[in-house]
Image (tube, rainbow over all chains, first blue to last red):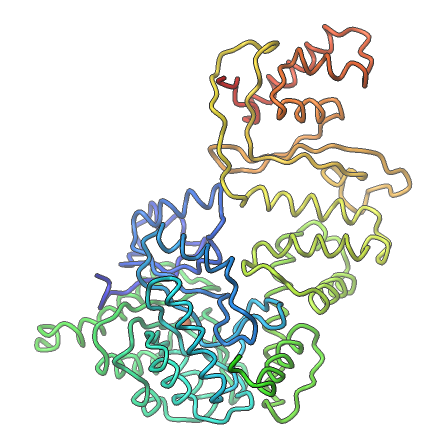
Length: 279
Length: 251
Ligand SMILES: [Fe+2]
């Protein structure tokens, strides 16, 4: 069981420490299936070794749940095989779109917060869940401009999660980034989400690029206010796996493990009764 | 379709802007911020192509490179959900749209192909190895070869010569055997002659070297067939040391 445990996104840069080193000690790892499906040779060997050592969660990039395009069935078929092969019980995707007019963009674009989009996405999530024969978790994404929005972001997320009966991957850093960029109260926002559906959480660093704009880079250390928001949030949800996302600009592994330790400590305090009592 | 035309249109406009840099959105988005999407998306594409084609990227001047990437990304609908396969689409696009003519770089297709193949062979799905034994008769047995390879045929020596030194006035023909070492997964390439390229093709057809020499006799008119056979066997023995030839097929 990974609930209440902390993991890290597996990057090729971590290969050696994961297999032979002693610094990074995640309970589990996360990968984007797109990066590993069909992969052979050297990296396949490494991937197989790493996944023998650590439980695996998957966080997709290309499903493009918010896209006007059809679902990509060829990809979904490969995905299903991959999830079975590596015994992945937790597969998540983004509440965004990454493909439009049959062209992949390889990044996450914000969906118009609108009622027709809600209905469209609910149907797509249901279709995907039926096909994969498992519930998926969808993630609240960071965004830099609203796009023709007709409802609040929390309403958009809640209606979709409840309507599709899927799970929520709550990215606390994304809430922080959005609350800063769009000037709302992060605590209030979190309280309005369907917290009973949270099945997974993400934490990451970001970069402030303008006076009033933060970009979600996954390339910096997590800042204290995001740790605080995380602490606040996990008091409101049942124990779930927690992932540290670090994709670029890697610090010393000791620093990364330090962040994992700090997250784990916050989880233990909130989620293990005797810890809370002892403190 | 539950999505309304208006919503779809807005989504298309945003994705078009990311691909082309031409912004047709108005009040639907925050104009002061939307450019970040174009920047972020473009950087992702640029990065993946830079790292896939390091030799060409290092050689091309920035304007030329940017123009190629922009032309590709704004006009081509990227079809793979897996971005590490995208350099293959770039190569194809460059061929189909005659980049070598457009940019006056006759060797461009050869160079892009060579760089893409190094990457493609490194990451390609594991192929099933043939059943083989290490001892056998070089003349009469069928040679077993490593299935993770390609033979490229190019007009310019892009595998041995830096683009700045390639002479574009006399194209010739080169064959490059490019393959993945079974244990390390490292990619190796060897410049081979047309005779050896054809030999490997015949080995794929499960011919023994004796049969191959017979079949190639009309093409090459070997003055001394026994000598030609010996040469081919030496070539195969050398490839065995290089982990391309595995041994001899088990029947
Ligand atoms: Fe995330």
